[in-house]
Image (cartoon, rainbow, N blue to C red; front, side, top):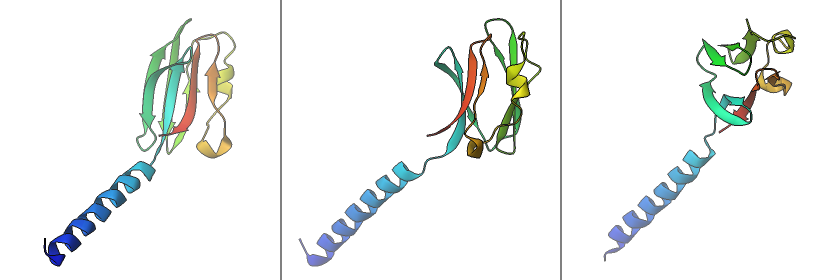
Length: 109
C-alpha cells in the first residue's frame, strides 16, 4: 500500500470512532410515564401536547408545554398529582398519582 492510502484509511478510522462517541454522548431529556413501575410512554419535551392515560381508578391527563409537565383533570380521590402543579427537570420533582398507579418523571436517554 502507498502512504497516501494508509493515511486515508487511518483518517477514516478516526472519523468513524469520533462519530461513534459523538452519537453515544448526544443524549436528550424526555418524560417517562410509568404504570406500576412499567414504562407505558416516552414523551418528547420539545413538543407541546396533551396526553391521556387510563389508570387503576380512572383517567389521568398530562400536559407538556415549554419543557414542563403537569397533571390536570385527573380522576382520583385526593388530587395530589394535580396540586403538584408544573414540574420541570431543574426542580427534580415527579408527578405521582398513587390511586391510578401512574408516575411521571424526567429522564436522560
